[in-house]
Amino acid sequence: MRLTKFGHACIRIEKDDRRLVVDPGGLTEPHALDGADAVLVTHEHFDHFSEETLRKAAENNPALRIWTNTPVARQLDGLGARVTAVGEGEAFTAAGFDVKVYGTWHAVIHPDIPAIGNIGFLIDDALFHPGDALTVPDATVDTLLLPVHGPWSATGQLIDYVREVAPRDTYAIHDGALNDVGTAMVGGFLGANGPGIGARYHRLTAGASIDIG
Image (cartoon, rainbow, N blue to C red; front, side, top):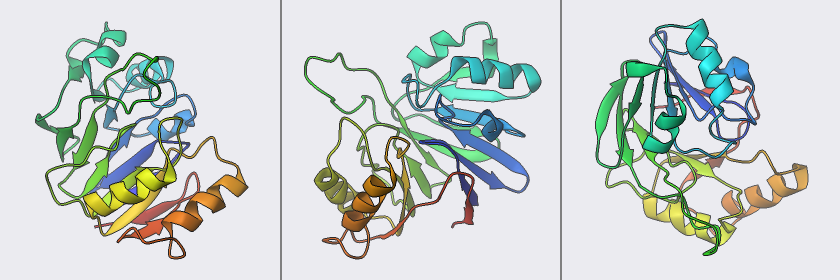
């Protein structure tokens, strides 16, 4: 599989001329959806989901399919059977990729802020995108997409999370609010000079690609 990172939390997976995009939100360049066959959306926050961008992509590509949780699916009313709501424990095929759903809720930001739903996607039993939650799948994960910065997480939690998931490789996502200093600081703790996460840590710049698997 070929992994391409786009703005913030969005990634694209390509295999055999098939393209699957995850979380093309408001901090992601719309061209991330160019040529996409299917889209997965973890939750409704603007940095993961842009209704305008998805509706335009669906208009430009009548074959585009979208899988997401129920709250996001409701916001995409009018697209009919092209949008499928899924939840914890479900499995499906999107653009030829096998996808399994893990998790239910977004990580807690503060007890006074209402909880919202969040689902993670395990793709081809190899790559896991957790959205905005530190969900641990009951499966082997080769490549973990790690949300390295958000109002709901601390670096210490991320270290313990990676250790528990135990992937071979970890790639930073959810870093759109970090400047160069913040990026280096997080990388210092999660990389080789940190206390150890048990996995190789990588950070791709927006638009960069790498073969995984």
